[in-house]
Length: 423
Ligand code: IMO
Ligand code: MG
Image (cartoon, rainbow, N blue to C red; front, side, top):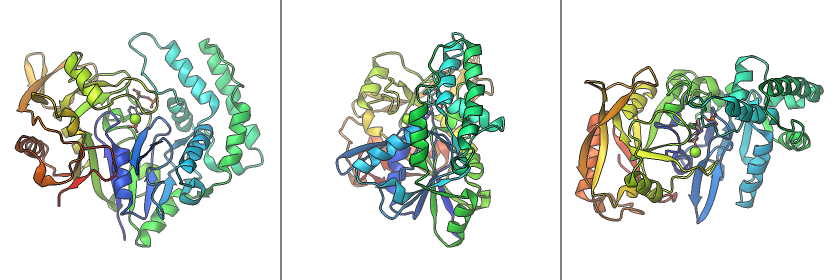
């Protein structure tokens, strides 16, 4: 029985999961998204070309790789059609390389309007900073047991089902008092649904388990990050899905025992986009310098990302919750020019020093830092471990010892080929 390996983000999203899945996808016959939707923005760079994967799994540019959109995903037909067009321009025909679980939840145009209405109506301090892709309202309907699913588009009464749910949404938007034209995207939605009918739809859990039983390994691609998980993240400033390891089992229909390696991806610093706590956030020129060096602007929304030092308390928590077996460190090259590099190793909560992420999101924690001497040399593009400076190796060794899990992959540049692997 082959195993299902997993790639997860360990911070607040934007860790570089897309690149790692693209790199690893060459070794797996199949790649699957198990949760989230087009709130994800997974940047891929290969052969001088750039693509941002939102709903498509990041194995889409690997010939011969089967890509699955799993049942735990929320799928927006309009965004999906657009993304398939962009992938096609770069040579990937999604119709050949993609299968979709019939149980994936559909995002309707009115889910996006509801997302906007909810954010508009939220009081100051209560706004989530959502990507406004309709993610929260679509998952709300799923849990309320009223969603439309991908398989429903083949039913003869699909249009009636859609109109009935849309009417409920419109009433809710009106009650909120949010001004919009609820019919504006209807024609486009129906065209996009017709496009979606051209795809191979499967009974997701059987599809995945049959592949594994036939000896084919598979890679599950997480979206967002552990600190945005609806259960384990900084609630309520989270997304509406299970971004952690449990979401793999529920989103794909696989048993925990079938999971093999768990690759946990983190950046050598932290970023967060949207609202919510961020203990190591920097508001000074160092934060601005990290943003500039790391090009930390949203791949989906273009928003400048909040930046700060690496938070080991949060990282160790994410490693624990997910059972990470292999760490993947991204973008340390963006810290090349710093005299001193800081790592948060504990929090101060009033007069006490704590090493746990508090259950209460608004606990006023302050970071306690350990400082490292910077390496002061240009690391971008380095692929030979022998040319890494001592200061850098010391930093990596410290992190491994603190976390207790090996850093198996180091990425020092956006390109698919810029990768260092340790055995
Ligand atoms: P990838 O997969 C970073 C954030 C939003 C907001 C919160 C809720 O590229 O790492 P939502 O639209 O889900 O209701 O927004 O979650 N967020 C992300 N931040 N990367 C992402 O995805 C994100 N997806 C959602 O900014 O704070
Ligand atoms: Mg992103």
